[in-house]
Length: 302
Ligand code: GRG
Image (tube, helix red, strand yellow):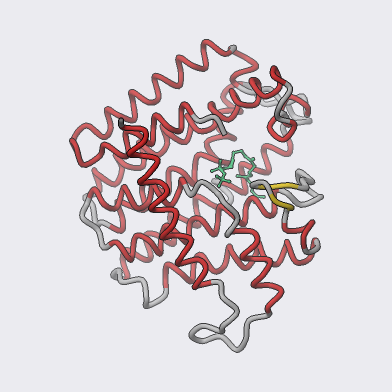
């Protein structure tokens, strides 16, 4: 069955990312470094080697595979993206933001270490991501590296994740309308997912048309990711299971689900999966795991 093949592939890709991360984030100083403070490294490892689903790296690697890209280069870019995603979670959990004690089933970095350590571990993961892409060990030409660094900086920065997080923090006071909610979600969570798919195309030296196609596929599943998250929020509230996911409702923030209801959201999710599948149609059977990924994201239960 498609979904179980997908689960196995996701686990395999996750294992390669985690092996590389364990090596890259060891205490041993790497090329060009004077030393590595052990406590910083421990906090970084705690923030990133803690059982995430590794969805974004999977999307990078599967998108790259469509174009016969170098697997090692794709893995390094995928790992860089996971460093950025993990940094965003470490900082999102800080007292100044969500003030969470647990993440991925373990104490958050500021709880296990302290706030300064969590800020610095997040900063270091963010910075390290760009080094990972640009370093000589990533065997890509300079043009591809510049394209990746530019696209990643945009996705993670002002017009992407940090800008979206800012709008989200403001949303408790300045209630956004529907277009505003869609925009903030596309920035906060959508931009990194879009980048994941576009990055695979860049690593695989795809044509501009195919790069855009993969980016559009990424946008569709990014929106689906957020809608599924909002749906989980509601179902968790209804069954009174998930304190951790009931945040938006608790903060009085409107979501597309609270505006339009569960049935509408499920219809939107099917529409987005169909759109994602249509975008992948030209790649035929090679894209079957990416099709599964779209369905997994729309149906996800955690
Ligand atoms: C603090 C700069 C900064 C940004 C924070 C993305 C984000 C912006 C915060 C995350 C808060 C959150 C819980 C958002 C909901 C969607 C989301 C990104 C969930 C976590 O992603 P998964 O499900 O997590 O891929 P794992 O743990 O599997 O990696």
